[in-house]
Length: 257
Image (cartoon, rainbow, N blue to C red; front, top):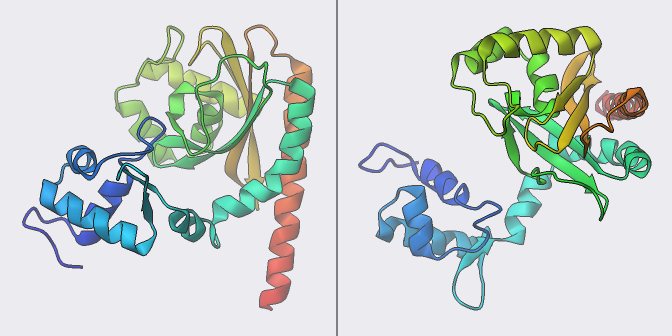
């Protein structure tokens, strides 16, 4: 794709436009999109127009742009995340029925945990995570599970970067984080009290596919409600998900052979 004067390609600029949409910015004017994407107004308006015509973005009654159904359709076709979510949902539902709080599925994406799914009870306690939302790896139980299993280069990169403090008890010291990761590897699960919300505790376990950790299954509970039964429920659910993933791989291999 042709580059702009700044050296970025058309694809780079489209990604920057799409990345301006988040939970706080679901509908935006082309001018706002241009500003948040760091693009000249004329470039932003043109790209928004092109994306609307392709169905990737849609316009509301006031002319503001929002993510279109076409983007969702394209993103879910053949997505690894979709297959993982489908394999996990039945087991997640059983965990959720037991804990009646928040149950969530996260994967490693760069230096963050990306949440693919979340089930919540109407009366559940505090939890800032959202589907398609992200958190730093060091700041949640799911992130700690994923970081503990990540390649050494990823771990060292996270340890070398400033560790954002989201709450009073977020681990923001590299030495403490290294010790916490060793604990997670030893126990096989992570407990993170007050790491994001002072009143909540996160508990998470790894999900493996063909021996490698591919996701974390976690719950967010009111502080003090974490216990061995919760860990056991998560481990049972993770084993069920792993079996489902293994069956899917076997079926796929049969069709490909």
